[in-house]
Image (cartoon, rainbow, N blue to C red; front, side, top):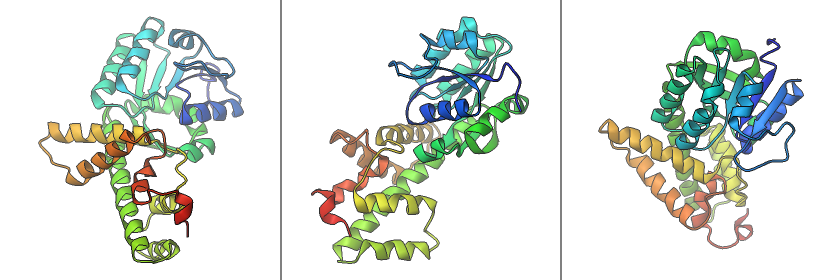
Length: 290
């Protein structure tokens, strides 16, 4: 299992995923201490990141951007010791990930780069998949805790490499969902029941867990956020920046990012990223259900 000290866990960032991870940890009989930029009515909600570091030696971070990550780490710096393991689960730019790791190392703590795949329901079921970069020995120390909220933990290399792999997998997810929305639009435009598209995909090599998840959302027009458009667009920008630094062109992702940007401009950033398909059904989606 895990040590008495590891039984005290900090969770910073109580969004869709962090809140559910904290709940899973409590249900596993961990003592969980939490902090969020905006106050939440959660048990053991503390006043600042430094207070989290004072009571918990393992801290899991779920926040949105690199600037906030570095700021949180800076606020904890004077309270981090050699006993601490700081685990960043936020998908941020690789530079911020490495900067956060350097600050922790200066305080003699340990750091893991551990973004995840899996959305709201996966977090609720304790079925996230963590992509981990960093020292394998540090991962071994905290693996039992990570297993509480994960179905798989993949060790993928050095700090920063796990983040890059998460970014590139998200670019596939975003682009695939855009093409799926286009396929649905073309299916409907030709008077074909969308259920037949679902049937065709089920028996086609291009069908996947992703298409099976997102096609019903696109058909129904129910865009309740499992992974928000704002966050997917953020990750697309990271991928495009990485490509620019390497002299690469990413035309499929560039097109999808433009579509996402236009959807955000219409006020849909808080919706699930599959809302990019809404432009094909501008009227009430209930009029387009089949």
